[in-house]
Image 1: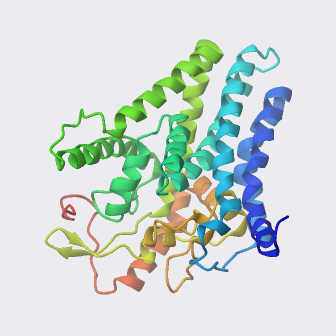
Image 2 (image 1 turned 120 degrees about the vertical axis):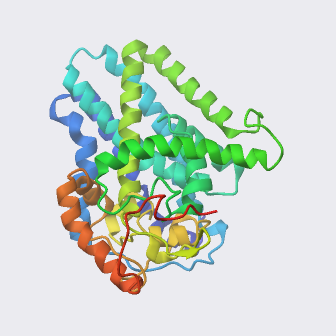
Length: 377
């Protein structure tokens, strides 16, 4: 029997399990075809945006000192998602190439939707898992990332992004006035190279070459190769092509989120290649209730960068006096980011206001590049 405290914890955790309702939508699209193949992006982007409009904001904060024993109902969801995503992804790779009722366009749209959830939910859950001290959880995060061929994200995120966010060395920090279609190819190129460089430098400090077997890139490559081979075995060449398409769609979705999280925000250069400490005002914050359920509080991003070791139910919300606020939740903001003129109209005035609020002494903001901003050490 559960005690009163456990029941209360379970009830508070229940809304975060909403992401599991996306899994049946993938199968409905595969079985019925037609307009139903678009259910996943429709639900992820539009339904949760609508729920945000209806349900409003959640500004309440949990006690950050709650022990791990009270968080099992929360952390379990990130572990359950892994077999569900694996079965759904490879089950569809087996079923769809043999489904005569699905036209080519329906198949493409369906696997785009699969990529939307493997990116929106899967990569987000891997992000939660990779931040944990438990090796098993970090391995689970690696498995999720290998399903979208983006395993290096773990290294890039932990060793580069968190350390250098808001500086020229962080590829993920979107520059002011940089449209998403310029940002996306840049971050694909720079993110992979900076991740490999970070691991190589870490090994060099131990007097080891990059080719040492302790380099996690060997694990990344092995897991990704296993996923590619499995996709080929299960679905043939068509299955492999669909696997690659969903992986690209997932990475697209991830980088849309990365783009909006720090757009135009920079840390002050203190001289001699040093920058101020990361503070809550170096990330965009969003308190929208429904999308935070879907994204397990990722939108409380200001606190995540301020206290990266906190599990998602303990992340704190910051108000407008403490951190810059997005006007809408991530689902609606990522759609806006895909239309650069609309994005600039919505966000550039907010960036300028942020600059006036936090750095009034800086009257001339130079272009955000390596030439005008020294690389951090």
